[in-house]
Each structure stands twice: as C-alpha cells, then as structure tokens.
Length: 151
Ligand code: SME
Image 1 (cartoon, rainbow, N blue to C red):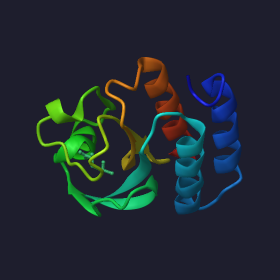
Image 2: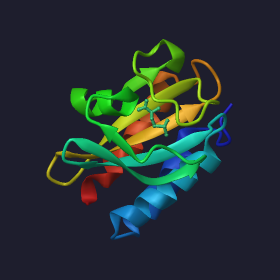
Image 3: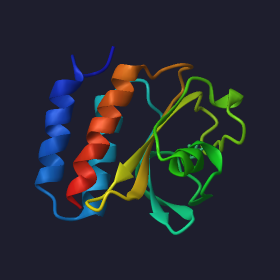
C-alpha cells in the first residue's frame, strides 16, 4: 500500500511544487524527494539528464549512483533509445541492467519531455521489491513526467 491513499493526493502535491518553480533542476530535486518519501517500497528515485548521447546524473534520492549512462545502455539508456517507459519486474532478468544499488530488484524508467517535445531526461525509480510497479504506478510516474513539459 502506498504512503498516500491514492496517487491523486501525491500528484497534486508534486504539481504544486513544479508549477511554483521556474528552474528544472530545482523542480527535479523536489520531485525526487516527493516521490521517494511519498511512495512506499523504493530505494532510489532520480533523474538522468540527456546530454547528447549520454545520460548525466541529475537530482536524486538514495545511494550514490553512476554519473553517466550511454544511450542504449541499461534500463535508462534503453528507455531513452526507445522513447518510451520501461517497467522491469526483475532487474536481474534485464540484459545490461546497471546496478547502482545492489538492493534494487525492480525498476521503472519514464522519459521526461521538455516544452519542445524532445526527451530532456529520464525519471528512474528503483525498488528492492520484485515486480513492485503496476500500470497504476507507471501512470503516476508518467503523469509526473508530463509536468516537466513547462520547461
Ligand atoms: N539501473 C539503471 C541505472 C541507474 S541506477 O539504478 C540509479 C539502469 O540500468 O539504467
């Protein structure tokens, strides 16, 4: 059961945080904190920003993480290449998964598009629980990513 009875309350809070912010890094920082503290069963939440063919570590909550991921590598790089969200029920079964935190067992990665429609980052959410994320969870993460179209 998530810390919030439903994602509506958490999405309202994140929406207010982002609407009140004119800086994408600051908005990412508060978004990572809000998700990490508002959704149960997570061990890492954060953003990787697109810099050419490389994802560069952005604001996050959790253990220290790898700072660069090449397009196409890992779950994050695969989501960037595909231009779509990825739900990974068991990271150990995902070829090329990059284990920043050995506690991670499932993962969701969502592309974040900017005001011009191009992917400017990915939102990466890790859980120590196998198969932690359902479609309702993914829909929430995608709704959060949508809020970054203002930047
Ligand atoms: N697991 C990700 C790498 C980022 S760390 O989990 C924060 C991947 O395979 O792309």
